[in-house]
Image (tube, rainbow, N blue to C red; front, side, top):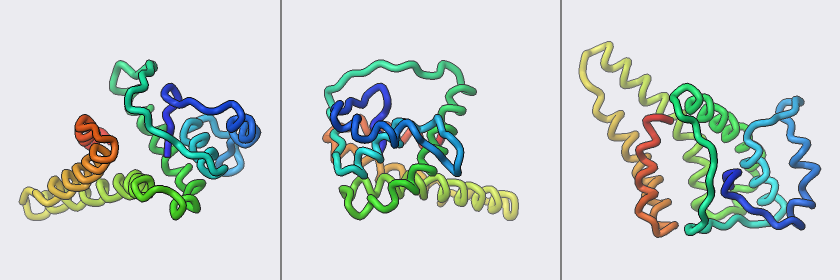
Length: 168
């Protein structure tokens, strides 16, 4: 659902068809300048084009070198995910089952993570017991999602993305 900017390539003819919509990206009536890679991916999918994962592609990009810029980047990406899900909602029945699972996971995952973390904190404060079920729930959700990605891509390294969950 999101072809990352530095890793994405598009046919010129496809991009030319969507350029006006892409450049006029608005959210709640205001111009938007974040999440452009996700927005373009969704426009492509809505127009009937498909995305393709190329495991041997190599790309370089600039990444944050300290915690504060990294967290700001993650917040921007989360806002983009939630905002653009509304654009893509009607696409879900037409998409591959994994993409649908991924979209649902990207949107419900943080909500469930927040609820289970708050419930665990409340349990710890109320009766002093350690809420082991919270960690188990989070680990299970993460492991399932990453294992499905690893199986689909036939790349075990995707299981390592589960380490990203505590940061997210």
